[in-house]
Image (cartoon, rainbow, N blue to C red; front, side):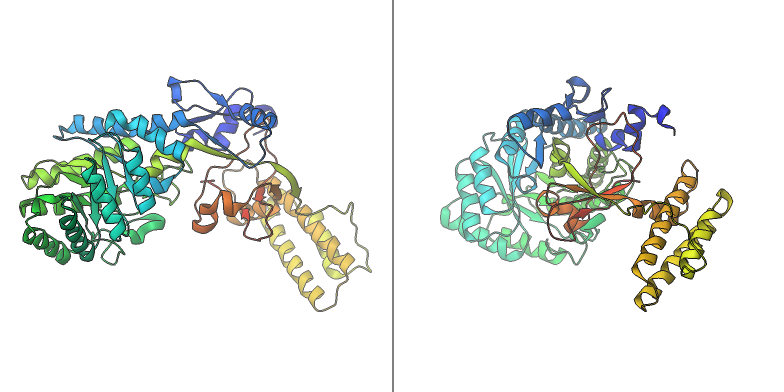
Length: 513
């Protein structure tokens, strides 16, 4: 593509904004990234204008921009998608979603989600005592749920029971028999009838980065043997009716819809069998896993999903309904804990690139004489003979010369000036070879790697470990692009480095599928 052909549509396609933006982000005619928190139902917000306004107020970088209206839109979208699936298949119950507080613990975020979800009876999930206290404080709707997951000591369980005493729909999800024993004991002490859920350990494994969340060797959940023991324990305590929910979790960011289908069907079977054992169950909690298509590729790659939100809801609803119908069991209310899908799009991290580390500084015109070292004479000759028909052969010859140069230098057979000239010529030649491949339908992998290695390092005033910890720790990919000057065609490859003194403080993997 020539520079005259470049426009904002080309910029949007280059960074695949339509793919990962999901209608919430676009490139406006000015060449700036714009956010649309309500998609087509609302206006567009120019990110550059937001950044400039923040600067006038004395705010610096890194800057996190949050769109509260987008949170509200996501809550509505998820709930309406489940309702549409239930209407389509004739599902005879309702959806009761919960937001896991651990996904984003900012008070403003939780308050917005709770308020937006009030019309849908959207609840909260707590995985620790502080989160449970926060959930109890914000919970106002008696029809919405508070789901208690994670490790539960005596104080945690007592706090949950106090919530029950206050008339809130608090469900304690037990993940081992000891938790059930302790819950029943504390409930008896306090004179409160508990609402109990059981996390089942599915045979179905997860997928993606959190694949170990499922399967027979998973850390959490009750095995089939333990489920039978738990049922008998509840009956012995004359509290069989207190088992209200069956829960499972196959991991966060599940990229493949087939994984979700298998897990849902297996969990629905557990739900049906437990119902037939005399328990008055009412909820099936499909846990988290609803993914976000970070790279816009719509594939089963770890940072993508090969399904849409509506397909996810359709498959969850249909498979639960089919299993329950086959078992002649009433349809349960469906609970999900897909926090990532609610909040992922609502925040944007903006950093300033204030400097660059170039790959190589040209030394000007370099010529070789008969008295120069052989590697220098060779690479000058190779560079002069470069043409379109021998570009790969030339690359291989140049790489060999560069390797021989390093070996000679290590042995003390080459001076510093000659080594610098050879490396300068090598990188000049590399740029020429990359340029010869531009616009071709097929570009060899080694040339792609060469183009990446030629990129400059752009210094940005932030810390990877503070602002993008998931990228460093988990290899999570995020969409990254300039927020302005998108009317100008980019002509440099680059990577981002932060201002910390740690060599891991860099971003060199991008969503380029």
